[in-house]
Length: 435
Image (cartoon, rainbow, N blue to C red; front, side):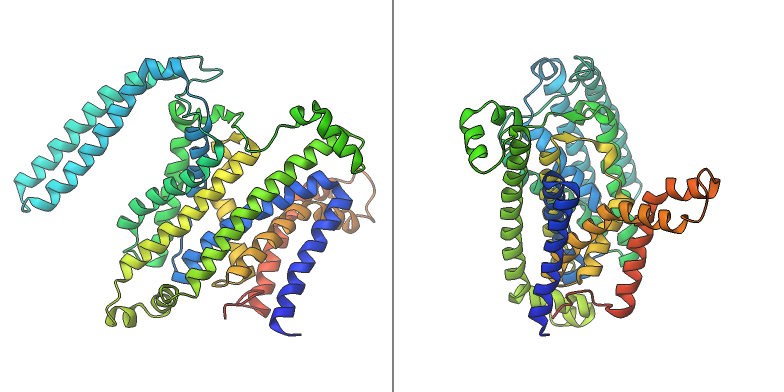
């Protein structure tokens, strides 16, 4: 079997598993899983760009995903007029003031000579700026969060189409990545991993606690969708007639399938565009330079390459892709739930997707995104079957049998670990290795 035939066979197996999922769990479940697979593939593509192409160990992926999700709220949710009137302008002034204080502190540190005068000047700027910021910020936040806290209690968004939020989510994540990269990319790889994980936790903690921005743990529900709503389709005689002509007598089932297919088309379009751009970057002189830097930074610097600048470029690009995926995820679920962005769990899964698929190969990253998501989804059921078979000789009511069956869902973590170990042992470069 040639390499191309092998790759086609691997993707064909994934397609067959999705079809079997449709028969076993229904078309709605299979399509929802397919859409999650497309988002996972995009996330894996972003991480592969950073790690596979440049060797950057980013463990803060979910922070950038959360920023992308936040963009859907800031862009597409309707503004809370009462909250804007109560403290919106003052919050904006406070944030601008905080940013100016930071800029002034950095400029002072660079331009003044080291000594007591510079130290006292910086301390004066930071302390005075902090109290001025809190003086402006705290009353405004209290006024905003007091406006119907059960229903809104936040500023809302701009009321623009939600598709606008997808590139904005990428830009928001890219901006955060630029700030992080300017300070953290000079660190060694293990320190970079710790730094990015810590910053991701900070981003998510802000979303959890700043109710005026994202409603915190109260969550934002009802994010507008770029596709029709099921109830509108079910009330349309034209849609019902078209669905019946295709053999769908139940308009509820037909509408849910149609909506998920619309999401599939949108997500697939984004994935194709990003894949095309990633392949162009991979095969360009810039991509060859990035791989040379990844393989030997010292030699690349000796050839006159600015390693830190190139690392910053690819760190920003990969994070932007993760931000777009986060915006797509929030759009599909129509909710922003800050507590669901668990950096340790989801970042681990995304990294496993890249490692198993094939680090440095974009097709491998996509394959890994689909395969690990399928294993995660089916792992609970497979674990239950495994525990039932293992405890079959035991009588009903035995504590060991009940305990194992009750904890069967956790078997999917073990399965992913075993699959990862097997891949690292027998195919350490992944299922589709880098050429």
